[in-house]
Length: 117
Image (cartoon, rainbow, N blue to C red; front, side, top):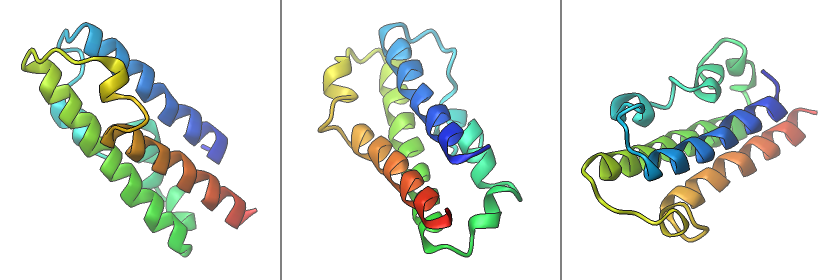
């Protein structure tokens, strides 16, 4: 996986989460969503390929941002599974913890990409 693919993989989560909020059909598992190493980006970050960048402090920052993102995504899944009515724009909007965590992942991925090029 390259950095651009990593960003695309991460961006796909927002669409998946919006769909889930609109129809919490149990297709997403709280434990899996909350884990930072079960998605494509997480598997890459925790792989030997991803660990090629472990010497860069930015890599550790990206891994932490990614873990924070999954914590927030898990919180949204948990709330949806309980039947809580949520509005996409409020939960996933630019001022939400989820949006901040998501932006941090993309930003730190781009920073690391620039650093290693």
